[in-house]
Image (cartoon, rainbow, N blue to C red; front, side):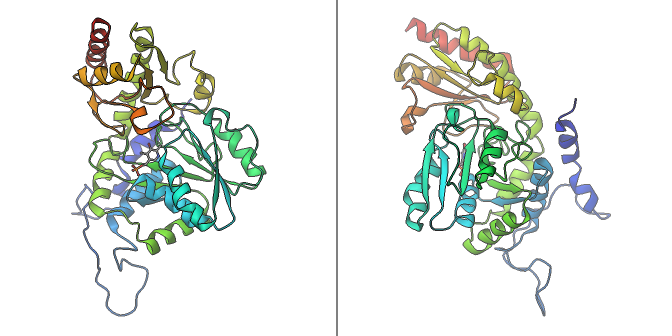
Length: 372
Ligand SMILES: *Cc1c(COP(=O)(O)O)cnc(C)c1O
């Protein structure tokens, strides 16, 4: 059975062809323009760079092809998330956020949304359905959660939250459109940080919002134009290029994670491993049912903060860095940011290095821990 991945990936490389005239460049031109030729009356054409730009539009067409839904591009993942929260909520609304997801939306809620009379509650991803959704205007899921890699049942949350009258938003950053399809599972709005695997080269911040609800997207577009939260054309151009290889890169990254996770689990220096692809992971059955791939992130716990730092620094093929999803593998000890994880918890992001070379380097660094 096909999940559409191959057709989507193949079609992506030929999207521009339809619109080309004889002599047009095959690659996407980069249009750097604040102003466009505008004599006489304004109309349905490019007029001003805060409202429209041909490079964004080509990128949004590519994102829409991947998501099977219209998309609006933003200069970062948080700009995309903010457009949903500030563009759709009003004073008196109550929203539900994951307590263990990416921390910035919680800080935004605390420091800014609250000033506008929007209240938020927190709930752990693994028990997100418990307690129901009565009274919420918007319910926000992130699955697998970053960094703990817990899951929640997207379809079950969407149907229960809709029954309670809430809008449902999914942050799909950890999975990309090739790993998980939240809109197909019933959510109203998808947000993602393309800063991670979609761009994949650690040189761009970017984000997008996708929705099949025309009214929602209209509000998001209006928010972007009026707030000025617009992406730079050059960043859009770079992401356009990155997306051309996303399927290829994500395939290698996920395959390496599938190969390496059980070996980590078997290593004597490793206390615990979280990876939805491991058959005994608490999330495995749900992951197998709702995800197309198990992702490229692995959580591993070592004995202490010092051991975790020594493992990362001692591995020749791991970049010590925050963020994830790049061509190079990277790792970081998440407790350094105050995440509610063990001091020796490392979030490992598998990159595009050949799998066995990568494992040899990881194993050598783990082996060295046991000797020190
Ligand atoms: C990185 C990340 C974001 C924010 O993206 P930025 O581009 O850094 O603003 C949002 N959600 C998740 C799950 C992320 O990992």
